Length: 396
Image (cartoon, rainbow, N blue to C red; front, side, top):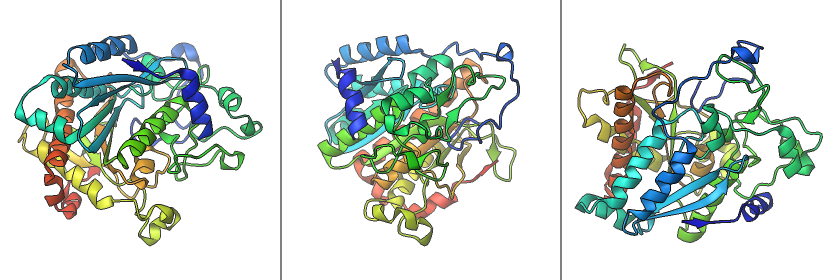
């Protein structure tokens, strides 16, 4: 297992509702008494120590097909891992658990790493030959250990890293509230998924704080810096990252106009198209943004799941559209030319038993394999992007 030094990573970064839509700060306050905060059970899910052992085991038992690297550290020094499978020239980057209470994606991703790394089936050999699959499970390990959305970091720690921000207001995604599940007042943190910027070389500037949801983020958290650095390394090595997939959870919803509970929602639209009047502010990215490819990728996942038939995997919906979220990893990387796919799995980790969680894990894997297979075979380019709008909407 290869490892970069923490000091080098951090210095390089300086130089250079569960779901995607976050509620307004402090809007979810239920109790101001930390003693009333409940800690949901996370039994059955992998913790960071178990992830470390699993990653080591995957590398050792894959006959050289899986390379594992420590590519960064969380704010509290926990390792952030990257597994690389395959040697193809088409790059697929998949990450999970950027919100630490959204855990099914990590389980699905680890299962896939093992299957693709170990199997000698013609189909999985083809994936290894045609693709370079980069998987980053549990990219926010401090939040994982706390079973909460935000990382574990104070604004003072941000200012210590970026002294130019002294006197600035904390960023809008800084959590300091208390509700029935989380005590951010005693233990603040940031929504790491809003800490991205389409300018991958951006350095935080005081005038850009506190900002808001429809504006870019800042790369002030070590977790976002690590993801950004992996993305840039892949750009430098391959020229571009063809596909970026982000695995999340959402609340419990139904298919629009029905009572059918959603299994998971998909999306490929996170910012207005820079080639339209609505996306004028992103005109610098007009030549790299490829919204049609993002829609084709989503269709490939949807069709793979529809082939499961009338089952727990059948109710797949389209996540709310018309978003403007450049501070998300999906928005930033889409503007940099990646086809982008959001998975929003139903519910939260504490809501279901093991049977239901097993079904959700299988659903995520099925959708991901649909993407991987269509990209590896180039069948992705035969899909009609207009079919994206035929995916049923989520009723929210």
